[in-house]
Amino acid sequence: METKIMIVDDEPDIRAAVCTILEASGYGVLPVESGARCIEELEKGFRGVILMDVMMPEMDGWATTKKAIGKGLLEGNVVAMLTAKEDPDADLEEVAETVVNYIRKPFKPDMLVSTVGRYCRWLERDRNAHLAG
Amino acid sequence: MGCNNLVIIGSSTGGPETVRRVLSRMPVLEACILIVQHMPRYVNESVRAEFAEETQMEVKLADDGMVLRHGLVIVARSDAHARLAANKVVQLVSGEKVNYVRPSVDVTMKSLRSIPRVNAIGVILTGMGADGAEGIRHMKGVGGVTISQDEASSVVYGMPKVAAATGCVDFILPPELIGSKITDLVKSWSNGVHLS
View (cartoon, rainbow over the protein chains, first blue to last red):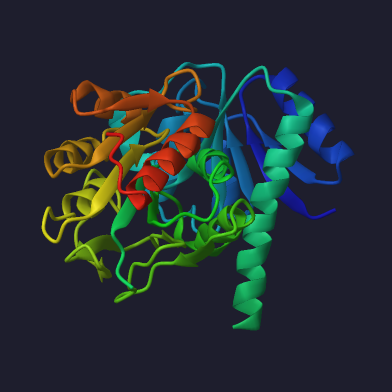
């Protein structure tokens, strides 16, 4: 099963739930517990859909996203924040071009599957366009 | 055939889903719709295709020199600002990001001119930050009708909140009603009546 989704969340229960839901729909899921581990996997070449928790110790989801942008690691990825937090602060607009959605916990499994499926199709279309071009 | 009716929609985080809901409520309009959606470059074509699934109007990614016409939906490309020349033609402009983004909603909206006269609607949908607020102020100033998304339906109530705070927004609505409002306004213009 090709790994297309990375769930970045410090809560084991959330990582387990996302893996269960998405793997049941045929997606390969890479669970990581911190922003630092997310950066590591991006540096190793992960490309796909990233579901990023906002509130994590040490490096939160916004800081992780900004760091990944700064390192040029998000090219070819779709990032959606997955969080229980309310509206983000206005000064986070610098990630607006990168973060396509803001999914609130608790989420409905069918919504998560359909949303992630759309983002996978976006990336597949881009990949196919490159192969054709 | 010129384009006398123009709708400019600015949208960011959570926008691809929201724009689809707006478009789904519109018939083929006697208007050109220009959408500035913040997004990564490599999903431009996918997002365009999703928008096209929601409407009978033709949906194209913006090209430099593209002429506005009724029944056409133009989606701004990532990595270039989309300016309007004489309210008739799209100009793709490279250059610095504005409000941390390129394309910027402000740049597109502020390029609208009061002459030649055009019936215009400016819309701000869900998103982080403040892009589009100055554009809405400008559009109101040149005689346009302005709309922002309501808080309850916004994935992120950032851009619509700042736009509404300018005091230059005429209607605050959820996406489906935004689509209906645009339709009603354009139909009234086509019939020579001004609802605004």
